[in-house]
Amino acid sequence: MAATPILKVGFWACTVVAVAVVLRRLVALGHPSQINPQLAALDAAFASHTALTLAHILPAMAFVLLTPVVLLRRPAAVWPQRLLFELGAVVGVTAYAMSAYSVGGWVERSAVLFFNSLFLFSLGRAYWYMRRGESLQKMRWIWRAVGILLGIATTRPIMGIFFATSRLTHLEPSQFFGIAFWIGFSVNTIIIELWLRSRERETAIS
Image (tube, rainbow, N blue to C red; front, side, top):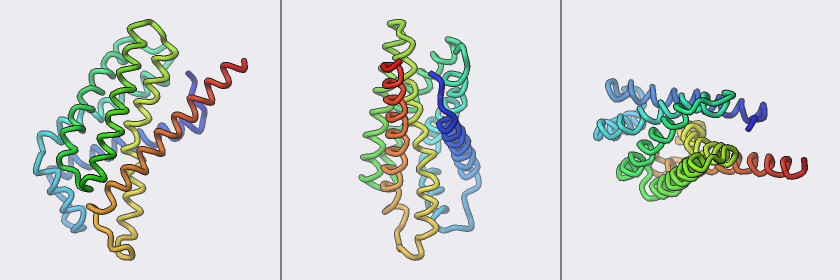
């Protein structure tokens, strides 16, 4: 399934941001922010469960780095796809565990539970179609899974807006993290779904 130029730009932008988010978190675990009190509090929250954080973000970064090989290479090799499923399972399971420490409380937790379940469902469907030898359906569901996971990158600029306007809104991270999660993941999920459905219509017409 060939991605459109606009989708490729969005894909690469989300990939870069997602990797940057993980690298920033790795640095912050050893050297918490000393400049911004809100960031310092967030860094301390993640540092309180360092092992779980690492178990989540390192496989997530590996998953993100592997997605271009699976989605954009032609023909795609078999082993990256199998590794993608394994990494995705680890990311999904640890995301459930990470939700116990949600900064944004139940609003953020509800977003994680919903979209993480959708991510694992999409990955499971892709694996099922792979076992059946249905390549097209497999790739469609992989695109869905990847789009959802990269929603974590889309949440970052939204969070940045909330941070930048916090002096005006007086909102704390505990108040806007959940909103940012719902917006970011929803945007990615909807965009991928609209693109896939447009491809299905084009295929049906042709």
